[in-house]
Length: 116
Length: 114
Image 1 (tube, rainbow over the protein chains, first blue to last red):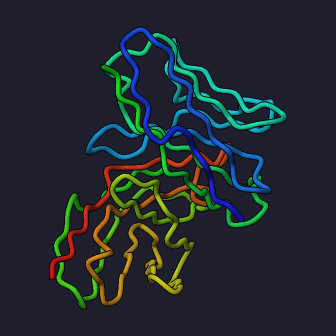
Image 2 (tube, rainbow over the protein chains, first blue to last red; image 1 turned 90 degrees about the horizontal axis):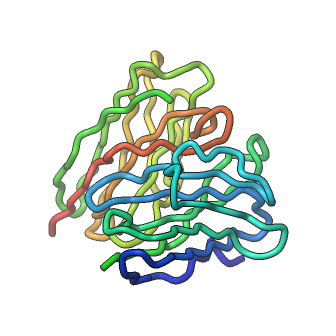
């Protein structure tokens, strides 16, 4: 059973470009979370999605950031018109539905975004 | 979610037992205590979760006193490969009651020396 997969692992963009980060959850998991980690800091929650639904986006910046988890295919975190402050590691995690077990979140290896 | 307080860093030597204590004075009745481990350039990895008393698995033990206002992660006989950041999280089943989102603090950076 493959773990959570993220790609690309490293992404370099120039200011003003768009960044697309992809996440494939573990098999059988229908819940996806995105977190951002700045250097020397802990992870910060951004958004929680189920298939075709955004459940909680309280940690998502109001502008330029969007996320989706379509019926088919991976979850996508999209950052438009990137700025240098967007440079960070972006982690995706997946889990079973709440109450379906121990609710453990399994994390992917992350995508390291560098904005030049 | 209950706020947690843990040491910023700790040093240890190979073969020693390491205990990392986390304070969570405002823990709620439904909250669990969960520890994650993160190696450099990797995503966090679940270590252990508990509600009260003691929990033990193949990698660690978690001690929780009766008042649940603190908890201690115990790593037996650490090795160099245990050098990592350890996060203590408190919440419903380890996350928020509504969405399960995890709230990470700064964590404890454990450095294991030879």
